[in-house]
Image 1: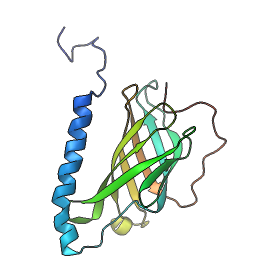
Image 2: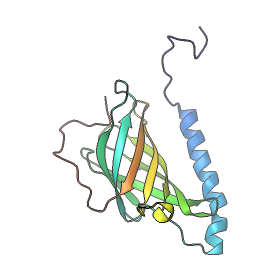
Image 3: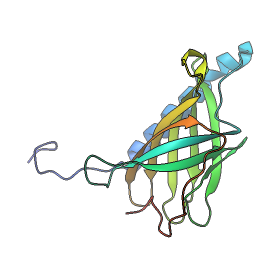
Image 4: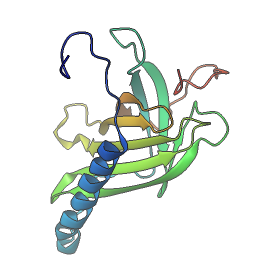
Length: 170
């Protein structure tokens, strides 16, 4: 069988894919300094909390999402439902001179899941509700699972009763 034929297993992101994502982020960082040098005020996820919906790739179709709170400080991201160490470093930069958008990356241990996050944010200026939004992908580097992420800013975000199991592991 050739890759892509019916019956082939799904290939999870490899280290090469992760390195490619990191390279794209770094190129965006370098190119975005043009905006910084021109002094444009940029949208940012820093110092904001988002109501987020996470869709795990290992759930049965249609990949039912679960609710999460993602809190960004100036340089860390905290994932509310992660057990033990639930915070890790994060950085963001404007996207190629577009002041209303940024790209952000983060790494959060989240128990043993070792999550790598890459996403974008967009300010609410063009949204009728004025909501700041974000979206991205989470890669669980320990097992190679992926998650889709989408969220809207909500400083009052709370999750229900904490679960005893790590939702970022199968």
